[in-house]
Length: 395
Ligand SMILES: Cc1ncc(COP(=O)(O)O)c(C=O)c1O
Image (cartoon, rainbow, N blue to C red; front, top):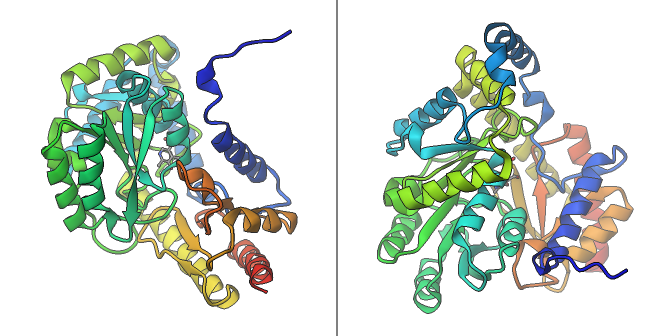
């Protein structure tokens, strides 16, 4: 029997294969994996969450177990809005929707904004699962080069002029996959370009709070107000398994559509988890927790960089992230990231080649490394093996 499935499902296959391999490697305890983006489990507040869950069930069990509103638990939205306001970004709890991780918010925004054939700007390279999500709605993706200091503003201006895009998706802090961060000058200049257009900005910031070096920059939401929708998540600062993220949208028409779509998709995000998370946030100091996690990641990245200096051959360069969970390796000319990925996997080390993060380029000389997860011993062994694999390709 020939089953015909929606053509929308066929486009992201290339990226899906990479994603499936990352998840497979993460699940195999015999493989040293730098391929995924797992937070370090040491940072999970298991006991505090146990106390929070107990309290919610004892004090508010009926509400936690009942159906609830699509927009999400009000106290949690108020908590998030307050954190935006502390950064000088005017957002009210009524402009926030709690989502099933920021991944769901990416889908909601795509569903609301993209008609087939619409142009969408992305950083080149960009977050693989965002590219996949956009593809489900059949846009034309227009990549804009990412440089050491952020988006290439000249190229951005040209891309907007020539393509009349619906929106641009960007990750200005410790970007996935490169670990790069926009300087304030680039943020300001890019914001000016957006302000002179009618292009919406979708700013994704899962890593921004995990800064362990340098100074923070302003959000595009600070510069652009309702022209920017902001995605956030508790995945990297508390727990990814709870699946709690959000979208902050001050543009009323877009907000109403997002909320209607969310309600249709799943009625609402898991109420029990929202309430437990909020209880945890009430009884514990989130900033202290984030500071501890950031310090751990600082130690991890410094250790991984010291191993890279020791084991990687001359001619390989890496980004030196000021936060987040990823770094980006550029191999000497002529060496494909995919070949290194495949050879390393045969020796028990998983990395992700640069290819799936690009819309068009293939056989690129880059790989992404996750540094947040794993003991020092594990990091040293994996980097040593990876160095040997790269050296083989340089012979
Ligand atoms: C840039 C980016 N956006 C969104 C997500 C999805 O995060 P969540 O767990 O909140 O769905 C990730 C996860 O790795 C990410 O790296």
